[in-house]
Length: 224
Image (cartoon, rainbow, N blue to C red; front, top):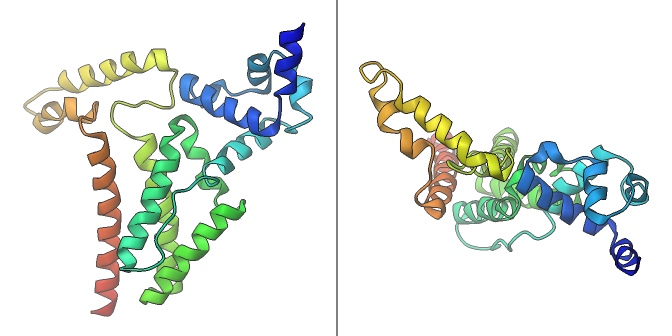
């Protein structure tokens, strides 16, 4: 009885969100239900409703969490370096819980930290000469790029339960290698590279650099 009371005492909105993020990482986002999370705390589902009204509110809170501990972004220097740092900060935050990373994009305008990041990014781009529409598109794509990089990392399979990931990767790899090589020589050649990430940090740096290069090219074309 004493242990159960201790667990109940630890029950809070923050604890529920933390545990839910951990479940999503281990079992996939599909595993998140009020009942499943309640089991983690050894309580009934009704106990969770004191802290989150329903599953939708829980998912929203999980998405908000990514913006609460963003790495600081420099406020001086080249605009492109600041933009790169902002996207990299998002990537770092999302990589902490890849199983729920896709929840962040829908919440960026619904929490103060997300709005602050968006406001600063838009101000940075407008000051450099981007139009309102261009700045909005780049800011939106910055969020989408960060999510895409994390949720599509080769070899990660964050949407699936941990024990299923290796099997899913092997199935994908074998399917690519089994393609007719005379018709799909490059797909067969890239089978390993497309299902495994040998240099994870390099993968993220390359993805962020590609995004920033596109923003630079957009500005150069507009000025030309």
